[in-house]
Image: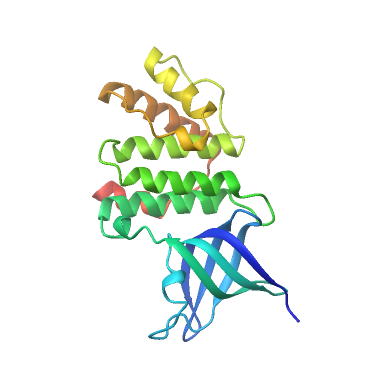
Length: 214
């Protein structure tokens, strides 16, 4: 008999599979990135339809197969529906999921990346923090978690921009989104994070293409 496991995670990718199923990529705290199939999730009235949407966060009950998992049920604590209703926030959120997908690996602890996604999506819903700043904080912290960043900004910057860089690198995820920057400092900080991304990441992200034309 196949083993059943309960994993805490988020749907970071969801696509049709066959006539009525969905293929899900989950980032889980316990097992990193996994693939799961939600059988019949596209049929009207299916209990797996809602848990099969991107951004769905909660506890997923899965059968463990040889090559993939099968979703049996889920207790979703947050669907982040407000993000889906805001085009700009949805694009930023989708980009966060794409970047997490890029970095995540199977059977590696996904705790820190999962916490970062959750807190970053919540930050997108806070009017006091510009989405542009949320993006740059998320990018830099993702690279910090994965060990791909420089201890200091890539070039000499203002004291405020240097402090923002050091703060993001050193602060636990729960405390990240507690500051804002003046426009000129945000531009400096953004340019530094962009350069770090250029150095370490060799991929184009579809969500950024959409954001560019909004």
